[in-house]
Image (cartoon, rainbow, N blue to C red; front, side):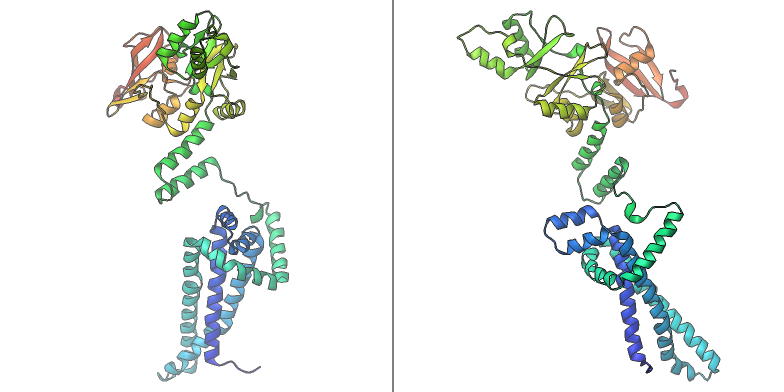
Length: 441
């Protein structure tokens, strides 16, 4: 076999370093790129994305191909690179009149250092950084050549990959392709937060996503309008009396009760009332307008109620307690407000459930949920049986409440400022110093 010239050897060294860079970039890019993004590009008609999908769907095989390519190029650099570079420095060192052994040793060290530097920096570190920062583009460009390399050396890759799988399974581990690519809720939240910090999504989109996750964890008791606050129409009242209630309250829908609120027979829509009022040919009757109510129980998840409302094509549901009595009602608007925030129409009065008086000093509606107290004020009030701040206060005091009743808990003083029929309507929360903290058991 004829001896290769130094120039040709250096050219081969350049090709081997370029090949190393190719395999390193491909390896990091296919691991970093998001499958969802590749699928999106396929849906948009990007032909290169088809090759990328084939690679990312068979990571075990193609990562093995990358590793084989890196190994082969490293061996080639060791065989050709170090001697070729050492030969370049040999004449220069010979002029120093050193011994043959010293010249050979120095030439080898210099050649080894230069090739190692080029291999690490140009062949590995730079391609790795490029692949991580431009994973999508690198994957699209390199997937086609990587597939060709895989097919050309398939027998070797099959043997090596099969041997690796046997070893991995013997250690009780799973192959890469068997790992789930799904993300947990906390991981999705972290991804969304990072996307917001990098400017990919805005604050509103981040808030909506977090609110959706919080909403799916809530049950209807946490957001329903409680029974005492329900505005109802009654079958034992005259049409004119019920009409006065509608004109006064200005809601779109009203539960209709027979006797009391434990006997909800349905609901009416104010549009139907308008039609009945316009028609002067007959005597108006509330009973003919009643629609069948949607009944749910107090511990039903909000997401299930929303699905039932969509299926039944209704926007109001009556909430029942464990004794089948009326616990309250919930509307589709109440559920949507858990995602998008407070929705107010033309007839809603300005209302703020949490009013900041001063730093560390708040006035809170008794119906505010403990989850909202934790989220808005950073005060975590533990309770397994109640969901509102008013209910939590009553559970801790265990007795009649009057305005001015107060106690201290976790560096905060809670004071009732307004009551109605033994219900806590308003609570003042004021931060106090730690040295007077008194925890109520």
